[in-house]
Length: 624
Ligand SMILES: Cc1cc2nc3c(=O)[nH]c(=O)nc-3n(C[C@H](O)[C@H](O)[C@H](O)COP(=O)(O)OP(=O)(O)OC[C@H]3O[C@@H](n4cnc5c(N)ncnc54)[C@H](O)[C@@H]3O)c2cc1C
Image (cartoon, rainbow, N blue to C red; front, side, top):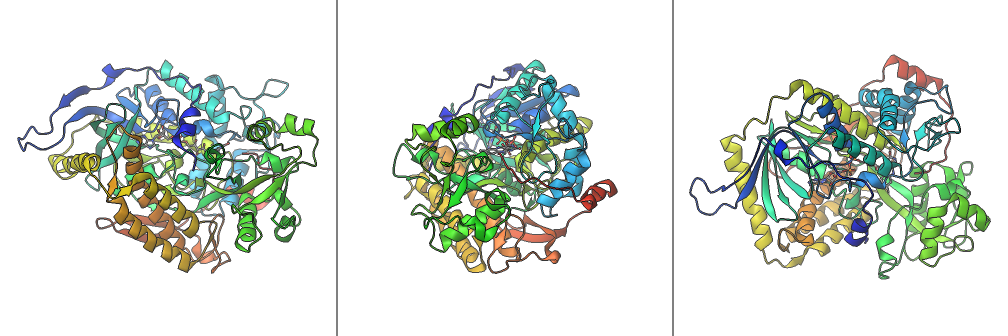
């Protein structure tokens, strides 16, 4: 799989927040052994009213909202250096009904498209809250310096994206996420938002009903940190990287956010819905030059510009699955078609198919697909004469933490937003909507918190004794443990398990076998050699813990949902069942146990229902 070298090399030009350590209410080192037991590890103690875990678009926008509303006792942290969040990898665009190109567009049609693509499993209230405010959010990013691509008149340009009725995807060339995060970070700098980088959170402090802060470690210094915080915002990204072939960086989107929230007592929702992008790079993983590119996106623009898919028997197989839309059909349809070809023995040796655009002129390819052309040329493949090998790749987890209309979980004071939360995308995400969700819910959560913030509070003695100290002991023991298993081996075994047992085509037997294999993997994970706290393998070992929780929720949700809907396809239940228009929640009832419940979906407002009834025509070009 792609290693960290690629992730770190992909570091961006985004500048950093201003470092303002004096903003912390207390910044001191105390010995946790102040009661004289003689064995507890030392930790740094930080008091802060609002702790924002995650410095991608969602975390940054929350912090900006808080600062603008006068809440300055805030700390934003990330496990990487600031500006280096996964958001920078978003390329294609961000949705909002500005109507630059299509004045007849409005937010209600954006909401209707989102519900349609989500197969009506989305929470309509959240969809409406996002789509209604997006025009304002896009303009505000413009004011803060986002380098949008523009029309000849200088307006924010907008283009088609998959399954949208109108051109409503704003973009900054093919570096939308990078430009967006740069604008947000600069805004946060102006507002002097305090940040801390290279801190990995390993546990939230909760008594099951209220949050009290978080515990983590400084990955550079190798020291424990305990944050005492009255409010915690989890904006820690998603879980698509729990799959073997995925479009995320290997050390991001490992399910940290959902796992941390679940452990603290919050519910997970819709975890079974994982969006598989049809065209990721299928490579020879034993070749060091190609290996880092495994699963990386081959943009849908290749198909948008006329690229054709062929199986190993040289058949243009989309004729069998979608004779009208062919390669331009929706993501889940094309991904499923490729998976079926491979499952039925018509795939390549690497489990993929061929994508070919060599019928186009070289000049056309160079002009319209410059980055793809260059990437493959650097690897020795000329797209103007040869096809490239592609296979579906895990791209986005629609599920996440269940939250109310303000982004708050069932644990008081704990918010979850951005890719960590569930509810906006339902059974399938509309391309361009996840960046929208990050800033929209950043504002919603920020507003709510600003109304209620009362200070850091204090960590109750019971939480300190029953949660903080045992957890620090566990973390210390993990560093010292001389185990029988290599961390990366377990990490990759888990990703492989998810690909084989909870991939695009699922059935009861495979999912049950996956849960059994997961239980065996848990035993191996408890006996790993993690190495010192500053090592890459230690961080990976913590990730394995998060991945185990997120993986179990995906497998259990997929087993529970005995129908096919959107990105979730059960070969033993191939049709959509109206009775299953319900969200599956998982909660921790006993230690370690995952308990399922199902909940009906809300109804759209009359104005959005009207937009749904109007049944606008959709365009199928997808460019993310
Ligand atoms: C290749 C690719 C292309 C995409 N293109 C688009 C697109 O064109 N349009 C679109 O709308 N969406 C796109 N997406 C999705 C979109 O980029 C993400 O959903 C969005 O950026 C998530 O933002 P976020 O702020 O929620 O999380 P992230 O940007 O992932 O930030 C998470 C933050 O949490 C921190 N963190 C994580 N775990 C911990 C921990 N344990 N302790 C401390 N800190 C932690 C990280 O360091 C980081 O700062 C794309 C995704 C991929 C993979």
